[in-house]
Length: 633
Image 1 (spheres, rainbow, N blue to C red):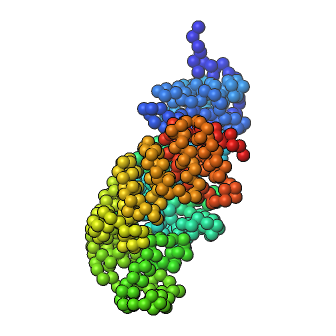
Image 2: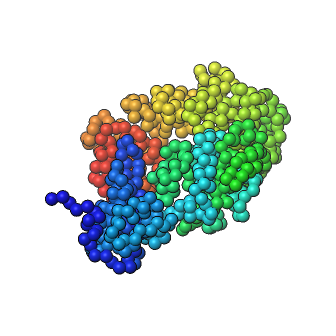
Image 3: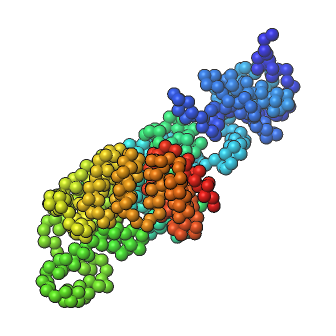
C-alpha cells in the first residue's frame, strides 16, 4: 500500500481556525565535519505556531544532503502538524523565502491554507534565538548585521579589507609592542591607537586602545587594566576558524560568499566588556576597513621612517590614513619602560663597558684609587647618565647601539640593529636582535648563523679553540654566546636535533659555568635522542640542587632497568621532594603554590624542561602515575 503524500496527510487533518505558523530554514548551532566537505552546520527546517509559541518539529527537521528544501519543508510541516500540534493544520503560513512561498501556495491549493511571503519573520527569529540559547547555554553572540546601519554591501567591503590585511601578514614586521597611532577621520570615541597581533604565532588581528597609558595597562593585564580599560570596552579585529566564529556571521559568510583569506582568517570585529560584547556600527566598520587596508600594504621602509600615509578606499569613499610609531619617534626612557614592566637584562652590560672605558681613559695605577673613582663616577647614577665614555672602534660603536636597542621597545630595536650593522658587520648582537624580531624560523636560523660568524670574527679563532676561564665574564664575548644559543634553539624548532645538540655542547665547552642555562635545553634532547650516557654525564657535571635532576635520574634509571627497585626508589624520593613536578608531568593545569613553596610559573618551568623526555620514553608516564599513586598524598 502506497504511503500518502504530505499534501494528502495534511488534507486529512482538521484546520485550526485563526492559527498562523511561520517557517524557514536555518543552520543548527552545532558543527559537523566530513573528510571531503570539512566543517559544516546541518541545515534544518523549523516551524513556529505564533499563537502558542510551539517550535518544531523536535525530530526529523534536518534537511538531508542532496534533498530539496521544498521536500523538507513539506515533510517537516506534516511532522509539526501531526506530532507537535496534535493533529491539525494552520489557516495561514508565513515564510521568508519568496520562491518557497510561491511553491507552497501552489502545493497547498485547495486546503484553504493562505501562504504569505514576509521579508523577516520576527517571531520565528526570536524563538530561534531562544532555542539556540537553550542549546548553547548562553545567548548567541550578535552578528554583524545587528550593528547599526550595517548592510551586506558594507560587510563585503570590510571582509575584502580583512582578507587583504591577512594576506599581507603585517605581523612579520610588527610585534605586540609596536603601538601604532592612527590619524584619520574616525567615528566619535573611536580608538586612536592599534597594535598588530600575530608575531607570537597564536592570536592574529588588531587590538585597539585609546591612549599610550591604555596600551601599557593592556600589556600588563593587571587590575588597573580591568578597572580602567576593559570596563570601557576594548575593540579588536581577530581572525579565527569558522567554527569559532559567531553563528550569525558564519551564516553570512556562507550565504553571501564573503571573501576570506584562508580557513583560519574569518574576521571578528567586536568591542569586549567584562560581561557583554558589542558589534560595530556601519561607521566603525568603515573605520576598521580603512585601517586594515592601510596596514595591508605597510612595508619595512614605512616603519623605518616612523610615520607613513596611505590613501585607501572604503565603503564610504577614499580616506587618508596616517600611521606612526610613537615609541620609535619619541622613545620612552629606560626608567619609563621599567615602570611598565619592560626590562631587558642585557642592557645592563653597557655599565660594565662604560667602567672599562673610564678606567682605561684615566690610567689609574692603584686599586684603592680605582675603587674611589668608580664610586664617585657610577654609584647612584641611573642608566644613561653614565654613558659618556665614547666607543673606540666601529664594533664598539655598533655594540653601543645594541645596548640602546635592549633599552628600547618594538620596531626601534630593529632600526638600531640595522644601523649597527651598517657600522660593523662583526656585531653579533645586531643579528641576535633581528632574529628575535623575525617570525620566520628559516630567517632566524640565517640571522643567528650570521651572528655566530660575526662573533667568531670579532673574538678570533683562538677564543673558541682555547676559551678563557669564566668566558661569560668577558662582556665582549656575550654577543657571540647569545648568537650560538639562539642558533641551537632554532635548530631544535626546525627538527635539526643533532645540530642543536652539537651547538649546545659547544656552548658548554666554551662556557662550562653555563650562565645561559644551556644544560636545561640540552638534557631533554639527549634523553629523547637515546643518548643516555651523555645525559648522565651532564647531570653529574651540573649536580645542583634544583628539583628537576632527581626526576631526570629516575627517568634514566627506568629507561635502563624498567620498573625495578632502584628506579622506584629514585622516583619516589623525587616525588616526595617535589610532588608538583609529577603533577604537571601527569597533566595538571594548575598547582597549589603554597604547597610547592614556588610560584606556579617556576613549577611549570621545571616540569616543562623534562616533558618531552618523559613523553619520548615508552611507558614512562604510566610508570610515573603508578609511582605517584604508590607514594600517596
